[in-house]
Length: 403
Image 1 (cartoon, rainbow, N blue to C red):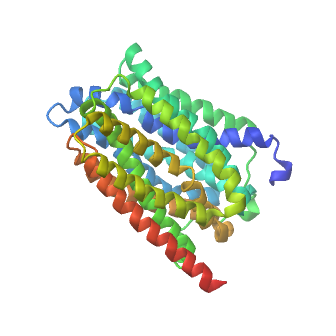
Image 2 (cartoon, helix red, strand yellow):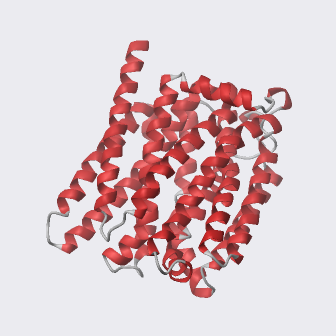
């Protein structure tokens, strides 16, 4: 199947991709209002352990990501996507019924493995049909719609908790997964023809990893994406405790989160326009450089004794962090995928696994280091941004040498 005979409009295709990507956002952001309730019920002696509910899902997603793409290259996109959705739903049911934090964490880890299906297979499907800046444009529009989910997910999570308990959120995960996989099954034909499939083997997978790592643009994109994910995961896992404990605004948190997510969503729309003019690398470089500025700004703001300044600085920094995602992740994926069309599924898996696992590993100690202020996180994200900026300058030098 090509994009010319795709039996759905581009608008529907972008909406479908956005819903697939939104599996991740919904699975993470809807849990944020539940963290205090889960901590009080399952880990009263160490409330910070509740943040592991976020990072355990992320780590499982990274592990599953490594295999999902190669399996979709071998067996087709739809079978792997549907299988992942079924595993995701099964583990959501286990999380719903769990009576200990350890069981919830185990369920979340394996649920993350299942979520790798919608995440990676959707990226491979986009690469099957588009390439280059046009692929980045499609990804930007999908990410723009996708941002509506994190905007409403904490509000929806709070509503579910009010109507039932934190366990009801897991039931919502099941319903969301069933709806999305039915849309795929009914409307999307298999985009990967049998003659274009690659047999699955660990040898070929490792060979693909070696081939990818040998390409400087791919290698650099993966490292920068890992650092950006680390900052994003650290922010997400700590943002609810910061609103609740640092600023005593737990009830307001879903509203602030929704407003910031909606503002941040405009970045993808802006990126879709700018990427056709300035290119992917330039926009990523600008985005990470602004993160250096905002990290320094919030550290400077905390030198003031005015707590209202602290809250305003944090909200601006949170908005800037989320806003920058619209100029980084999609562009970095497109940069790395451009020379890898012959192994799109494997490439998407390796990139996603590397960035997610490394990002999750870096984010976990930041979440556990929460001390009642955002300062440990600000220092860590500032360091990540400096390293990312250096890597993007290195990529530009390599491009200049190759020209």
